[in-house]
Structure formats: C-alpha cells, structure tokens
Image 1 (cartoon, rainbow, N blue to C red):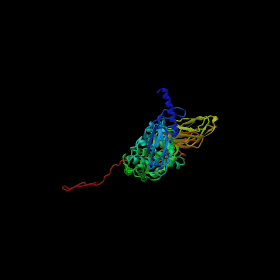
Image 2 (image 1 turned 90 degrees about the vertical axis):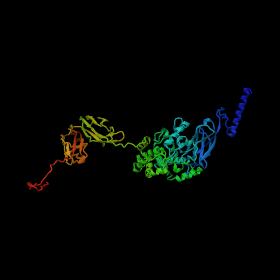
Image 3 (image 1 turned 180 degrees about the vertical axis):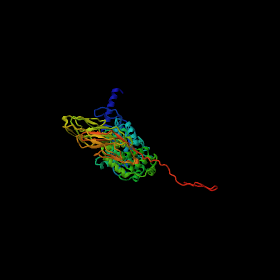
Length: 598
C-alpha cells in the first residue's frame, strides 16, 4: 500500500473514531484520544481505570463518591455500599492524573448522621486498578498537599500523609503513611481504621462545637481546611499556610488530646455519649468475621501519648487546675503498646469537665492567650511564668523656671530580666533616658505652666508596669530652695530590739515637706510625714538590708540621705560561771569512812 493510500485510510479511521465518541461517549480500551474541539489529535491513550476503597469517618454508607480529573471534570460517580465500600470504573487519559476523589453525604454508622465534612482522597497515576480510601486522614492530607508548593501531587501527598500520621495519629499503627489511603481494609486493620477515623472526626466536631458556642459561625469543612493548611510546616501551631486560623488550631489541639485520650482508654465519646458499642456494631456491619486485633486489643501508640501530652499542656494555659496537671503526669508515664484496659488502670481520672471548660475558654481566648497556647503547641513545653517588673518613686511636681529638674524612678524585676523605660506626655523642655528612666531638664521662662499626663513605664520585654500619671508645673517668681535633710541612722540592731531613726529636715522657703523611702526593710514601717523608720526585727529577720534611701521633697525639689544599710544581729546569750555550794566535814576518825557531796 502506498503512503498516500495509507494516509487516506488513517484520516477515515479518525473520522470513524470521532463518530464513535459522539455516539457512545467513550473509546475502546487502549485507543487514541479523539480529535479535540480544534481539530487536533491530543495523542493520549485512553484506558479504563477501576478504583475501589473504603469510606469512613466511622464507616459511611451511601456516600456519593465523585471522581474528578486534573481539570475538575467529572469522570464518574458512585455511592458507597452497605459495607462502606465503593467500586467504580472510569475512562481516563494521562493528563487526568492525579485524580481527585470526593465523598459527599451518606450515613456515618457510628453517629447515624451525615459526616461533618467532605471526605477527600486521590489516585496517583494511570493503572488498571487502584485502592483509594476516603477518611479523615486522607482528607486532611489532601488539604496539606493543596497548600504545598506544587499542589496535590504524588510526592506531596506522601509527605502530607506522613505528617498526618505523626501529628494526628489517633491510634494509627499499621496504617502508617500512604497505607492510610492505599491499603485494603481487612480483618487486620478494620478495628484500627474505624476507631482512629472516628477519633479524628470527633476532634473536628468538638472544635466546631466549641467555636460555635463562643459565637463563631463555622463548619466542619472549615476546621479541616484550616488544620490542613496549618500542617504544611509539620505542626499544629497556628502558623502554617495561608488558610490557617490560629484560634481553630488552638481549640483543635485540645479537642484532639481529649478525643485521643478517650480512644486510648477505649472509652471514646461521640456526640456526648460512649460510642464503643456503636463502633463495634458498625464494624460487624462492614466486616464479616472476627477482626484481629479487636477494639479492646488496639494498642497505644507513641504519637497518641505525645498528642495528649502537648494538648493538655495547651489546656493548662487557660485551665491551670490540678486535675489536668495530674492527668498529664500520668499520661507521660504510659507505655506504647498498652491496650485500653491497661491505659485505664494507669489513669486516676479523665478531667472531662475541666477539659470541656478549657475548650470553651480557648475558643473565646484573647489574642495574647492564643499566642501562648500556640507557642506551647509549637515548642511542646509549658510557657515561662514571667513576673512583671516593679516601678516606684515620687516625682517632684513643681520646678521654678531656670532651675534644673530631675527624677529617676526605682525599678526591679524578680526574674532578673533586662529592663527598659518609656515615657508618655514628656515636657518639651525635658529629656528622657530609656535605660535608666531618668527625666531631667531645665525649663525656661517660656515653659511656665502645667505639663499634665506624664507617665513613666518599665518593661521586661513581656510585661509592663507604670507609675501613676503626674503633672509638673513650671513656676515663675521667686526661685525655690531645695529642702535639706540630715541624720545618721544606726547601722545595726539586735533581733528583738526596737530600731528607730528620724531624719532632720528643713526647707528655707517654709514649704510643706513629704518623705519617701526606697528599699525599706520588710520588718520596718515608714512615716511619709516625719520620715521616721522604725520597727522590731525578729530572729527570722537576721541579715543585712542594703540600699536604703530616705528622701524629702518640698513638691518642687527633693533631697536624699546617703544610701545606708541596717544589719539585724542575732541575739547573743552571755556566758555565766557555774555555781557550787556545801559544807564538807573537816575531820574524820581514823578507821571511819568519809563522804561529802556538794
């Protein structure tokens, strides 16, 4: 046959194939994809692909399973059967992959309601047959992969499934990684899949319900999307992908800890009541035979222990109660491989009421509390208990024009943190030192008048403390004379004895004077009217009290005594010589006994 004849035959064959497509909507297996709308031959081989799997947020029957090509085109639809399985054959070409599977509606055999979120999965590439399970784990993994660079691909889905197995484990032991999506569900793993899927699904429900109770309008789908996006960095911490909501992350981590703890005890509660009997009934409907392991014999995994531990730590940010702290300590002592009965024996309680309250607290938490909770989730450790810094001092409230003004507050921090100072309402004529908190300057005649609302604050980088707001009035007229103060305080006192010191103070202008003190001993009292420092230390107060400063102010200027110390000495009991008495006999007859005792 000549090449011209062959070309004519091939063109006629293309026309015939196009007609077949128009009439039947399909091609015989293995034949070339027909001419496209522009008259071009796509060149792809079309083939039949059989896809089967299980559907479970708990087993789900009568769910609509949609198979979508890479461009979103529907390739087939089927419903899951009474065993929560599906089997569908679709016609695909290479560019359709990876395929997306959506599970919509149906009946969860444990809750007896529709699933609270759409289930998702994928098929990697062309084949004659594939297993593609749809469950909460594949659904979250699909959302993780969606926000990864490159989107939903085979490699990204593998990575996402590994993250899900580690972070949302819920009891997965043999179904690790891609097996969650691609392993056939049989007697060796049906109990594991049903309990773990229902556990994760219940965590989603509790998250949604807590947020709704706090006044937010949210769906189960929104929870799953947010958690999936958050997990692109490998941890639920509110700092993941673009669809992350840090409040959802905080609530979900606590809800997952509670649901996982119940699952580990084989006492999982679903929709508020014990669901273990319903799990067993659902399993008997979808699996004909005796599974091994059974529900009571499912083992605790290391990932479950860690998920519970970190979630309880997060709860303690808003519920720092003994019940949760004790539970966390007991959980840490559990051993992977324990069954439900052994886990129950190792725990003294469930802290259900406290955790329930904590979920509501987190759902309504402030931005600062959410940051603290998500920091715990990120680091896996309890937050540092920071002490706020302390600031004190009595600034002068008057200064004469042309006279220098200076005030420096006293500040300290129990944690030893570095401190920095700030000011608001600073007078234009003054300068401020952020390292020491010193406010100083010399006002001119043009600065006369009041400067109200001055506030000096100190921070340790986490918390801030402030002096009460004050006013500085710049006066005209006679120049103010600073008060004088003198006196030499005693530097020692014996425990149990009274200590008293009153400084001498005077003001040349006759202004009323007030006294102040810094670093007063805890056993002493101080009079701001007289400047008297007095008190009686006890034997428990023995030691040296350093850095004491007494100051006097006339309202415009102040003066201080030199800094001094007071040492409280222990009581010394003086030694006294012993005493002895008696009148010994001074003579004795030979042969007679002599005796004397004083």
